[in-house]
Amino acid sequence: MSFYKEVEKFKDFDMEKYMDELTHEEIKRSIKKDKLTKFDFLNLLSPKAKDHLEEMAKEAQRRSVQQFGKIISLYIPMYISNYCTNECTYCGFNKNNKIDRKHLKLNEIQAEAIEIAKTGIRHILLLTGEAEGLVGVDYIEDAVKILKKHFDSVVVEIYPLETEEYRRLGNIGVDGLTIYQEVYDEKIYKSVHLGGKKSDYMWRLETPERGAKAGLRSINIGTLFGLGDLVEEAYLSGLHAEYLTDKYLNSEFSISLPRINEAEGGYKSKYILDDASFVQFVLAYRLFLPKAGINISTREVAEFRDNLIGLGVTKFSAGSKTNVGAYSDMEKSTPQFEISDNRSVEETESAIRERGYQVVHKDWELIV
Ligand code: SF4
Image 1 (cartoon, rainbow, N blue to C red):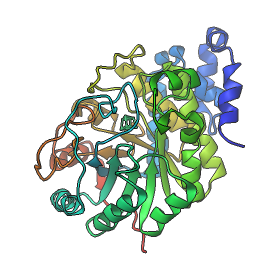
Image 2: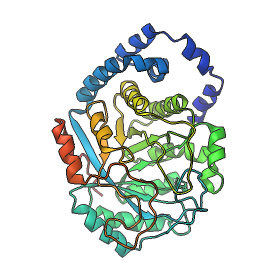
Image 3: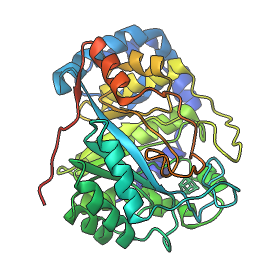
Image 4: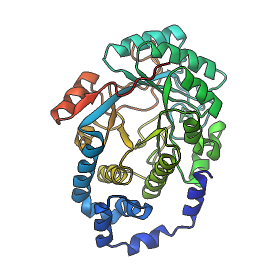
């Protein structure tokens, strides 16, 4: 069975009626439960739950400290190529955009790695656009081998691979995968992915499972808020994380909440996730998925990220740049999106410590 069965079941669900009939008493009961059902989770995502954010925050904080302690792990993204054969309407790297493209050679990846390692960060997220002819698995493998010399943990956020290909990467030391469904609503998915392999909804939806079957240790999923109905997307991404957690006991799953940021191509979002709803969704994820990590990237502004510390988040990106070759000051390429938190790694670390939390650079090391 694939998670698609859950997506299909949801198509017949009358969300409007459910939300109308939901009571504040039911929401309060959901907050207090030790193990939340799918409906409890939905109750916490509901617009009515906005009246209960304080109680949700207290519970989320308590359970978070119990499960993870007072820590925030840091990672840094590194883009190695922004060529792409897909046509995602919301992305600056869309093949139709006239942007400055760059593809790093192996010696340039090495130069980037050396610069990034100077920040003290030990956990790197390797990203590329989807251009298999140029950025094939052999190239990714070579890049990973270089990065493994400089970092303890290498996670990939690249185009979806076959299980065997993930296994190949796992064998040379990749310990995780980030793959966002972008939007769970199948109709919207087709309307924003106009061409290229990414227009195959099922291929993408089943990617986290292929990564887990290949034995990757950590898998991070999420929806890109801004493409579809906010509550429905938060709900389905939470259910997806629960489904994976229950089925693949050897992997750890985490969830991110990227919201659309300004990109080349000028995508105008119809669904705006405001800050209060963002916080509400973080709290709902924390209560529904007690063991899942929650990642917050530099798409969010510094003050907002700092205010989320203590509410259940476990991982921050820091010192991020979203253009290829940016860390070693190569000739500039166009960034994928604008960063909102421009602090250095050091400044981010200080902010975390000021909140009474510890910074973790190394929570895992794979020996291969
Ligand atoms: S979201 Fe990914 S696949 Fe789509 S255009 Fe951007 S880089 Fe390419």
